[in-house]
Image (cartoon, rainbow, N blue to C red):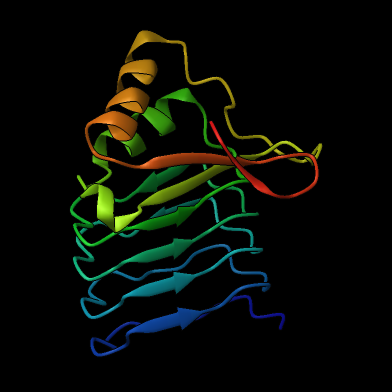
Length: 159
């Protein structure tokens, strides 16, 4: 597709939205309270605010130009793919702090960056600054999120 705009406002019963591989620069999903899965990868999004989408379980937003990703109050979120964006240390610190706590049995996972491509602009070092390291470790060890990257062959591997 080559959609440049997509108006989904008022679709409060919508449970899945797949708008991958378009030319969207903005996507307003505010108020889509029934949304469980959002796939908006391979667009031109610079920000994505899914705050308060309490039923959202899966979010796929890779290969955009995201500099921020707000998942605050997304209490059902279990799977996140946000590689190949422009998320810096501050953006990841907020993201990790906002991830919901999960049970180990939920098998929550986040695919954060891709090693196999030169186009990856996300932060890849989660050891500095200290705030980022703490947020990353808390998301892994206290909130039970498996943090992953794609290796040079395109397969997910643990960080």
